[in-house]
Length: 286
Length: 166
Image (cartoon, rainbow over all chains, first blue to last red; front, side):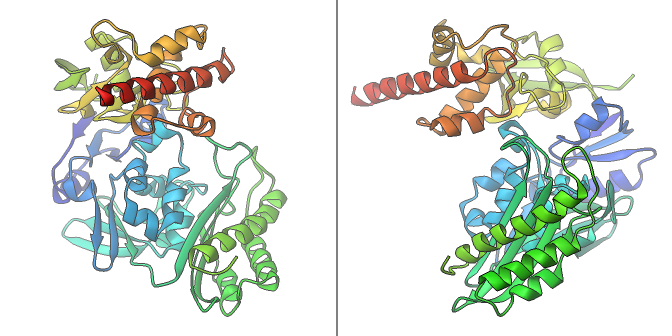
């Protein structure tokens, strides 16, 4: 196995593009090293991106935030402005594993690992996050919901890497939240995850985005669930409609963590709770 | 056979150099090449925390870091807790409270607990339990570990306020 730790994204892309055999990007390594240990992955080339400056920092820009692909969960929770602007995104990321894992794990790694139950992904999608995808000679900005195509698969082409995630500057009176359900309080994988962001005006929801995790092959944006919130003051009728729309959007599987029926029901319950938190954070009266 | 790379790094303040196969995890490099055996292997997949170390001050599992990644970084292990032959207050309290039985998880718990107390000198019981959720112990049932960390935190707060008065 060849190990490279380039100093620029360009070099990383060049290495990956001309690699023969399995080539993997190493960010936090909390998925890749486990895959290597268990024999699921045997890369000929590993490209460590942690020595690339623009991938290792959180930048506050005029348009919002730019979070490098190698930025750890611990770095995100230590960034006060980010925590204030997008608490749901930070909380979703912070739910990945223990403090030890937080020291290494990244949002982009969580995204590209492409697990349907990835905790940071519904929160990113609800917040309108975009991925900066860099390939040989070109770069494109893609909504996060377009990256994962199924369990373990992404729309990234050979030689393409995600350099960063961008989050918009939240509009005034915007709040977001991510909740997941797990049988344990820590160190577990989501049975259902719900990310919601909304912008309100005089207590009325003006804009909303609702995204569900762990209830379909990928995280799913549910425009129908967002629509029932818009124009409401998040009263019980709106919350009932939200729960119904979320449950209806689920296409879950049965597994050891929960049955499909159970996931469908819990999606509605969690959506109500997440919506209330997002609404409060947007400045709405609870 | 994987190719090997020379790695120069700092372990508990000392500069060390070793030839490291590119696919070797830092846990193995520390134990087998540097001789720092306080770092234990439990699961090898980041679930148990027995190999907890600090990498540039950040708590991580050494089983989820490649040895070659450590070049130019600073590593802290349980061996670095002792200062001038004096056990760290956490170590004293773990002994006092019998917060260990077989001992395999203990170095990881100590390193993780120190990382917690460095950032939060007065954690609540809930904060301690969350901070140590990445460390598994199959002997004690955790309660004695939590008590030991609380006692050490209390002692450390006392001695830091004493040194401030001085």
